[in-house]
Image (cartoon, rainbow, N blue to C red; front, side, top):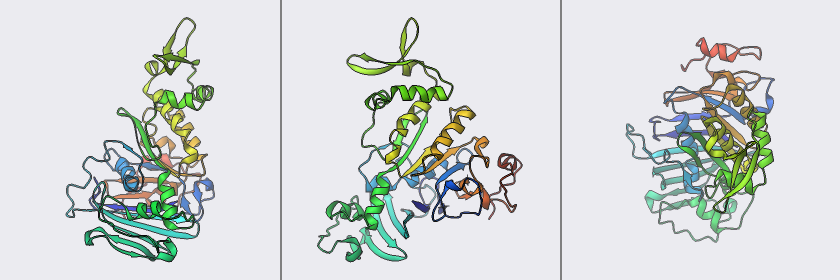
Length: 373
């Protein structure tokens, strides 16, 4: 699990932004949204337009760009990579992972998306791997933990991560912190569904047509039932167009290709459903503007569906303060990001003691939650 994350000089984050998921409070409701040893497993992120919600997700998923071969199907990721106002010419990323009883810190610096300057891993506050690409790949390592005693190191290209190099060239050791990090990162998924269509980062090796995803997995009836639960009643059938199987909506006298007749909200639900078929492989999900096209009841349905997936961490960004209620979440799992500078849970944004009976939405509207330290 990700316990803590920080980033500096990336896109809108001129100064260090710290996203701490370990500041658990002693609430006795929705306890399953916190996972041992006290880390947020399911969260909501609020913020005004331009506050940094999307950029936080992109920063979190930077790690996939050099540790995996998964594509980055999002032009937003590469645009304006380094902050324009920062005085430094590099970006700093820090990921603190919790793997069982071990805390693993992965720290690195970059000067462009695939240009590594420095990498370091600490396990329980002990440095076990360090590589400085600015010093001709100068390496410090603990061979006993990493199993790298007989591995030849000649790191000449700063687009090749030392972590990925070790993972690819040594026998897999399930207890190794590198193996833990690599497998976690391979399961990270960021996606959104807005006007630009299906954009995503991580998990998949190639983009798939949404018709094909449903048909290949033999999920047409299940997808139809999913839509029905959200008040959308269609009789779906499969037909071929120029030899390609395609989903159609069948009516009494005619039929129509499904994608040509549906609303933006229905298309967003379709995309969510397609991704949900891969949730068993997900470790960390960031769903940006997840309910931009949803009715509030649909947003609640999807949020509850995500919360039922206990085996991975998930965070959604939204403007929908209807979801800000203790019946669905809890104050230490509900975050506010402000001005690309801070992100804090509601529980740290007020001097008042928040109880289960409190109306978080009303408190938010009345200005109870501030950004002051």
